[in-house]
View (cartoon, rainbow, N blue to C red):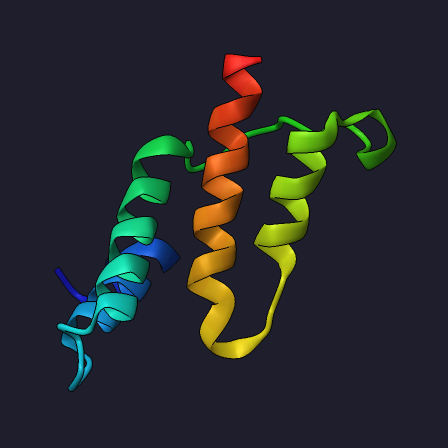
Length: 91
């Protein structure tokens, strides 16, 4: 499959796996995260998110972690977001 035929997550997962240090835990975690995102999100959706003010504490925490952009800690923020999202369905 050519890169131009791949989705953004396909490309990102492949890029993380092909890095010179692609065997590092951070790149493997990011590749797995992109693969999960490919499975869980439909290509075209008309859904809209509820307003932040209407979200519960775990939904808000997940959004904040997902949008955090501070270098090497970004994988940790994504893992924390996933943890909060799993608690949404449990509560």
